[in-house]
Figure (cartoon, helix red, strand yellow):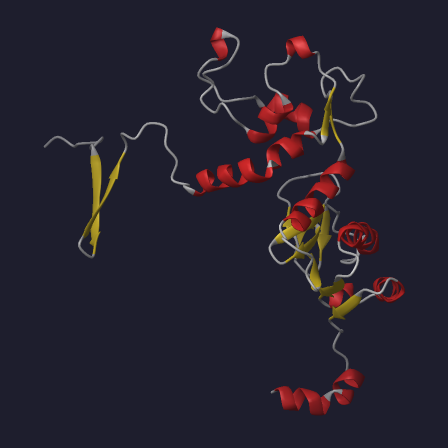
Length: 265
């Protein structure tokens, strides 16, 4: 009996009255329909154009096949517009080209032989907060800023590799600041840092940018026990920023809050 190794379709158990089949004749398609929605959002807010503007391109204009905007957006996925005939049919850019975008150093990009695209990190930081501010029709009465640190596990001998006792793995320890669903800050850090490391600098930058647009809006930060530090609380009190921070559990605190905790239970 011959075995059919390449059937035209696979049939699965029905879902209610619906037949469930798998076919492989769709050509270049995507199952992520959300990409179409993201494209519409980008066209409205101009995210990719604004992100591309945060880079300085020192490459020879006559030798550029992929603009910074193309590299950021990863367009021309079929490679139909490639200049050289031998490249046509291949996706946008090779890893070496993308490395020039990702690894360029601003101070040396203008003279570097390969990594000639330099990112303006401060401009990208401002862009995240600007997008958050523009999402409101009018200034809100108050905004909450949520600070968090989490593990980014490492599986090789990456630079800055440290073991973190709490997460029980080798990892980085990035700092994130959100307001609702809006990302305002993402800062990569090594895992030998305190969870709150760099928070005051980031808060000073973000709060200043928010108040420049919304001077009357009340700002409150919120974080777990890893951010309950004198430097953060002192900065908040000096700059009229409210804070709700976790406290490390200890016997004295448990005695002082015994009645309240019982009422909460």
